[in-house]
Length: 506
Image (cartoon, rainbow, N blue to C red; front, side, top):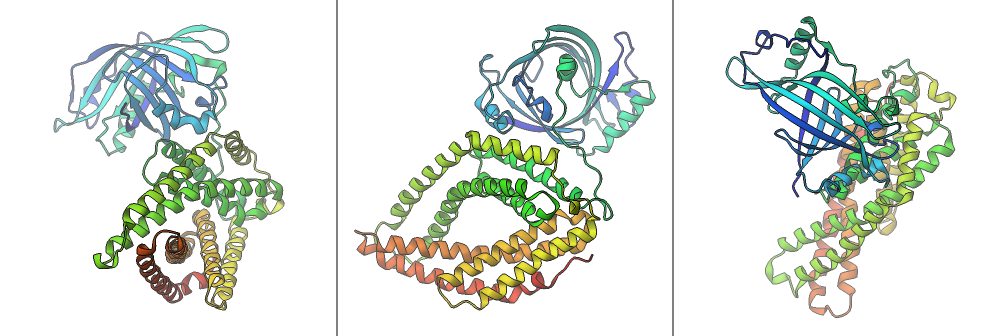
């Protein structure tokens, strides 16, 4: 079953049952109104008993009639915009797994069932520009709703909608059309959705937290919490990609988890310590589960490329097949662990706790102090940690402890990078420069750590029983990795000075 996705850009209006249509052909940017098309639509909306999807601005429905019959999942994208995912009609009793997997991080394992049925008599009018290109669509809907949650009830209303064509990138056109329709007497709708109108008092409060605009003199916690809002939302999106086995999704989700954990750690003084430590511990454990798969993924690709680059006469034995079998088995086992973790009560509890932390942050007095001075102090503290770890690493004798010390430098650079990113809105270009410099260090030492892991694996492979022919080749690859590791450390020493010198101004 195939799914497709688009981004909707739309504006809704309230309309009286007997109101005449506005003069659509008089709107700026519209050259012609196409022939109207009428459809009878029936949509069954699905949610959990506690409306977990609705509380997060998510809509899941099965609609028949019209040109886009099928299952529709709408996810928030930005103001006035939503991502719509579609799947074929299939079975009316079973929500497609492609859609349930996308929202499992929001439903947290609770079953979804019908909560309302909406029947709509729709007339749509295509709107064309003066060059004949289809620019938008005006929709006139007469709606009848039956709510199945709480006290059963029925109601009726009428609404209009203007939606830009999917290939129209000029979103200013929607603002122009909205203003002109409002000037002509149309009332921009205060309805959040048809479903919200149908459910009435059963409609849940939004789980999205409204925050003040970050400012240098405002509370230090505001920019940090705003950044965490964005990262947690992205983490939930990546959750669905992992469940759908999207390329690079495990890496992206782990990166989001690390961002969240790094920012909680770097700005821990703004919050009560127990809450932060509990979240950090669970995030670290989750990242470790994802990391087992990601590490195999990186290691497999690195060794495969190195093997392919070797001259054929240096490749003894069936190394390619051996490597593929070994890594595939490890990857499958690691992915099973990831899926089990993402379906576990422990994971869903972590998500609940993250949202609770963001909705009701346990601030300390430091969290209410002026943002510019307070966050600069904490980011610079992360910079000091990077410098200390650098000094310790360069003084370590060559060997496993040497590699471990530079891995600690990399982790410090990563924390500095994310701490700087969280306060770019307060510190501007200087925070951007600091974050970029720390990212550069992280990338260089990331290559070094990949080499460390590859050498460890090659030693295991080369000493395994029954591979005497292949041991020589594994030794060659090990030597290549040693050379590569030395080169990355030389590069680090040349390019890391900027990250260690930059500071944020208080």
